[in-house]
Length: 111
Image (tube, rainbow, N blue to C red; front, side):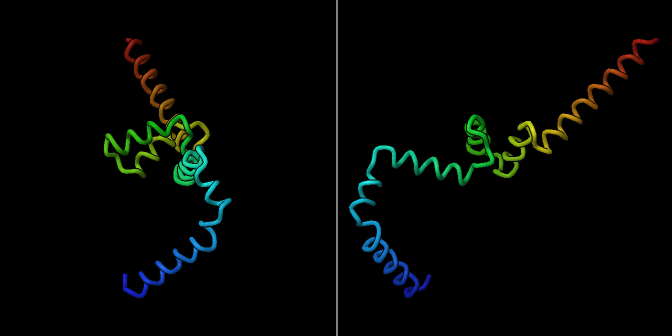
């Protein structure tokens, strides 16, 4: 980033503070006890809106502890969500496997 761009961004930030962030009603709102919780909730909704609340801990475990790439972890979570195409494919494959195993078992037991 060039020196001119840094100066321009710094000046813009100072202008935003003077015109908006330093107003008393904005400062009071940003120091409310639940302001941080609202900010985190908004961030999570924007970033993980596709993931149900009860699966977010599982998603975090997959990407942070098990080091699975985020795209793959998302596919894994979505494959377990009822109503998604991936879940439908997984259910069909599971039922086809169960039918094939049952047919093989019946053929084996017929003799």
